[in-house]
Image (cartoon, rainbow, N blue to C red; front, side, top):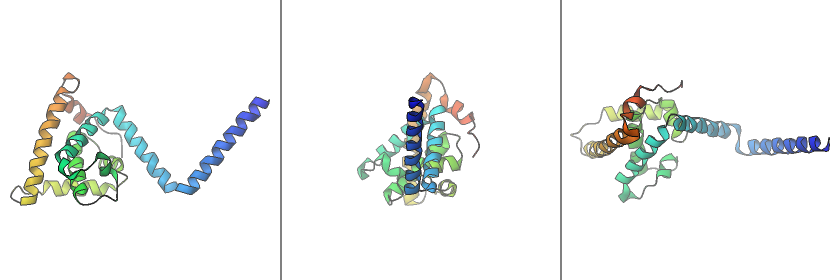
Length: 171
């Protein structure tokens, strides 16, 4: 019986620590962390993580002069050029993986889905004649070419078609 009491005591201690942690970080933060973990698990399950990581590496490489790190793309505090790089990453991920705006916004630090929708709307309205837009679109096309080659070589088949046809689970 002592062993059973010891196990129960340890379980009670774990719950006590979890309760204290919840009070400290809050339920909203916990929900946010859990949503992110669920999306990351789905990415791994569907092998999206390989493609997304490659896209992020390519995007960061394209802006290497600005010394932007991949981690910067997930932080709210980062502004300026990081916002442009994050925008490029969102666009390229949406173009290459069939994923909902909600899940993609969750992946990028639990932003609201309207952020992804807004980025995609802005992208569709870009004008090659505009100086800023043309530079952005040139970078987009360079990165897109790399991604196409990567996807063609992934698993020796046309994985892009397989990935685009795979439907994400519900929002």
